[in-house]
Image (cartoon, rainbow, N blue to C red; front, side, top):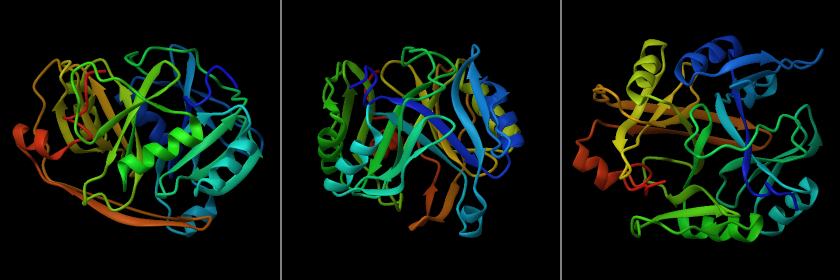
Length: 303
């Protein structure tokens, strides 16, 4: 077992316009970029302080023909991708792309028993140095919107060894913190009915959430939910980039943030036997309503 087993160690954006997506995240999150393409495979690295954080690749033609939309994918480190994929099958999950040697390591694309997708990686070639959960320009939180939160946690605990993490601000009903080793890395909860399918959401750290959300809007993205304040003074918001990939931002609020109007988020994905279509309608809410209705945000504990 490697020291980072069970940690999210890599992220990829599958998009319809690599250049536009690179420019968007450069302005919003502050990432730089460099080329890591091969002769057959265009690939870009997004970096923070010269350290690679994630990759950008084009949605494959077969995915586009099937109606797949841009998305972020998180990779969890495992010591043996083949063994981890077999273990997932035994626990009721599904392997969409079997363990395969790639430009970033030996990878597999999988889904948990509730159909939320993620990826595995063995021997990551672009491993960034370890950083704290609050490091600006890094991914600071991982959130699973599950069909059944307790059942999802039980699965990941059995499969990857994740453990329940202590909450230093009191129990938050329905929101289960989880840790990989000694590190608290995310939360799992039962999604609200307006989210039609389970999915993983990744939070990018920014120095100033006010400025970042202004750039999201200016550059053609949308703010789908938030901003919402956490107990430790950090603010979070869910967003969609101009190509349609959903992500989240978290950081301090250094100025007034414009209230979010109603946003309808839709997606369609059908690729390799996996199909999902749906929409989220996110109306503007008062702060008190946000606290009552958004367990993935305002009920998230201090981190």
